[in-house]
Length: 469
Image (cartoon, rainbow, N blue to C red; front, side, top):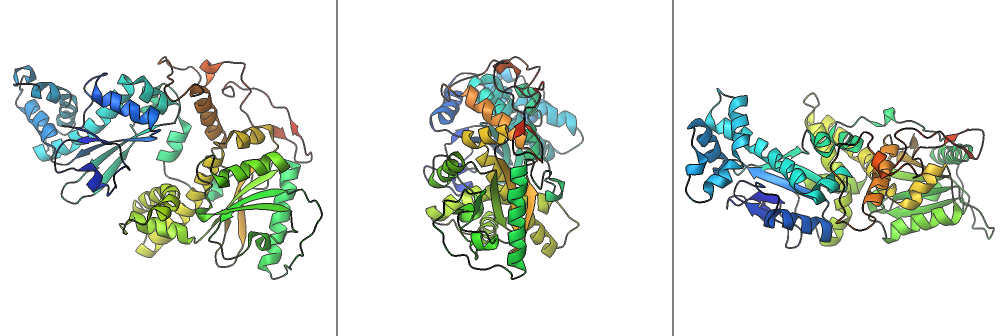
């Protein structure tokens, strides 16, 4: 976090973090005045050696440095005449001050300072991308996010500004996942390929749907273990908190599905047990479907939403679970609270629905970072599908593949290619005519195969302009 040196904005306290949770850099006005020096070097160290994925630039209300810059604009002060290095500091903020005064010329100084504070945050984001090749590369390949924020010193509330509005222009490439994460989420009715693309996937999903229908209508029955060697048709990633065995939920014979259960239905980080178990199952049995199953009223989602609303900081083992779910819960809360037409009860229902669906999507996004999963999806051997179980009835609704599946895989392949030699690798700054063109035409085409639903094997697909990584 890059924050202001003002004593009224103590970073660790305002985010309620413990020692070791944050890497904090502070100066007056939360600026980045040079392409060399301790600020840039420290940020690059955090990114390359500590594997930091998020860089937050936070300003605060009633900032003395921003106020001084706005007053300098009003009074036409020559900053070169200001004693010491203070003028140099203000010169780095003056552009934000001038823009704020020009944008709202008839507003009060207080209002102009508030706007200048936000402009200054975005200017710092822009300079970090322009000054540092490491930051530029991290943002460009979607390995790093630069997020703006403003802290209110009176209420203690953080106003999240998001990424720079011109992030694609600054990085010189289209960033579909940035658009996906920064625009309001539409519910699952807009998803495609709900029944599968290949014949094997269609049959596997139909088997699950039929079994779930038997379960819901009370026609399922206990199945005795068998010593027969059965090839699994589906891998199910589900929640440990479910109150029904997943094998019973789909009324399948022993060995027909592989079940990996984790709290919150999130596989977590790569190289951990849950993630590795899924990769092993794919490599060992090559099932046609990997299903992410979430619950409509999960206590893990509920706990994450409560945590967002100020519940006491839980113990470390609980935080590990909630941190993954918090990604979706935060986005759901922010989106639902902007809907002023809903009642309080309606808003709570919407938050739960959005958080549940977004958590399912987030788990799918993590799985697509796996090279094992990506290769099988691209070859047509595997399809990654989503489903939601109604907590009251046990009815499972299948929703198909991630609507941004190709963009996720493209970004993952781009990251793998860029950082093949380490996290200190950088990309050239020329504009890209095609987002993935500079990495060579000899790479495999990144397009989903055209699969005949009546055939179990994928057909070779054409190579398009945007297919190459």
